[in-house]
Length: 198
Length: 336
Image 1: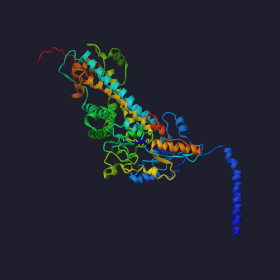
Image 2: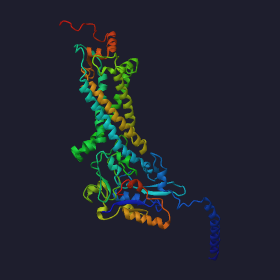
Image 3: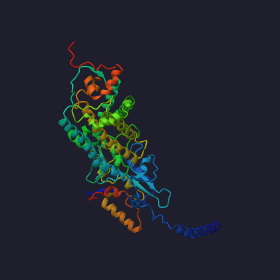
């Protein structure tokens, strides 16, 4: 099976935030949680770039490594998912995640965060595919329907790419060759380079 | 409308002039915003340890403005590789040392046996404070160790669902019992500080190894000897560090910064391991390790002979105040 990844071509991102909005709508993400966000670097200065960032579904994911109850698992496609039934809301995955992906529904203090929520690569959770129970906890399971994540599918400039990691990397490299510049495959070094299998 | 057309022509000419003039000016900046944009590689290489690449976000959650924080990997390494070593050496090491000590030295007995007469060592309020703090500490320690190592030690025994349910309750216990623990710490500090100021006698006690290693040697001590003072200060300083670091973890949205939170979790975890090891020694000597010692915190009254052996100067002080039975009566007194 393909090893799926996200790639944001920051030279194309226009910070329209459609990916953020589409994600919230597709999964009916709770108020206050953003599974995806657009961060603008050097805002207002020459050469500023915007990067759309969510869970990168790391190889040998740090969140899975530090979870005290071992609630994470990686699918055959390389998508990192978790079980909200097992999650105790301790916050460790947020400390370890290089990309700030884990979010918590309760921002109240006193150690109450609620169950962690993060990008599922539109692949749901441990429940049976496309059941109401799965939708309520994790949102839509587009992968099970043969579709790619909604954020990348509807990106107006095709900045955000999703799919087989080898193919989207090739597309990005072609773009860089053609236009002569590229600000980099944001997050790839941090998310995938530690492992020989990529 | 020829009039407006000519106006447009003039406008275009003016615009063209503007570009001709502005063109060289832009070139003087020698910056091409397209090709010379921020580069991930350069930003990553320029990062100092613990730094992160961040920018501006338009959503309200300002914590999400951090784009990449490689420090998360260091934190993961600490948790997976360093902490088990620290915890293992400190806790298993201490258990091993205590077991060897028990085998070599045995239980420290009263030399003259029990006199049958009692002297009040800890009043009810002191004992209440001790056990309030102690019971909270034990639950905090167990639930904390569960968070750190339960995944490897406990999860295989119970299975994922039962372990998760238990860990949820353990987490609640950890969060809420932190408060009575902190209250206990403050009271202990206030009621025992006057007897725990280090003094000259403590040097002598330390030189003699506290009489721990040999029978019949009892360096004189007031209410608390140097070892007990050590435990007091470990509890106060360790407890204060645990409270401060724990406070940030209980209220993670106050600092609202992942680097700060990582720092305090490391402090919390390392101090916890050392604290637990020190308390194991305290629990040992207060129960199995020394005959007559548990009564001090059990009933509050210790045997007069125990008090004389371990806290000779304190007994004299209490007798002078008339709050203790006189020690002059010979031991071999006929039965009354």
